[in-house]
Image (cartoon, rainbow, N blue to C red; front, top):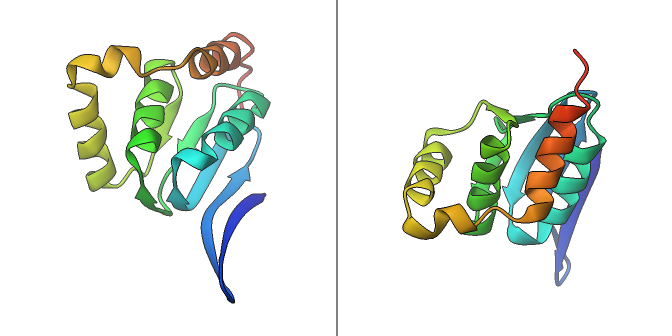
Length: 120
């Protein structure tokens, strides 16, 4: 389990919590662009094609939405995705430049994850 925290004065705000099992990753809280590398690393550690559980995800930014689209395009499943995130993903996917949004690292993580997949 990993968590990223932001310090604002005396207050500590939890932004993203990551729990990982053999084949799943649960994201909780706020998923922002500064968390992408950590989530990519967790996907690469999954023993089978990853499943992202987004049930406890509260907020996302545009880079996180684009990342989620790239994950889906590379065979990474998503469960419990809230309607607002799913609608935003669809809008981003329909943008003309959306083909260029998937970085090589996301593609490599997804393909390596699928190629090395065992059943859970």
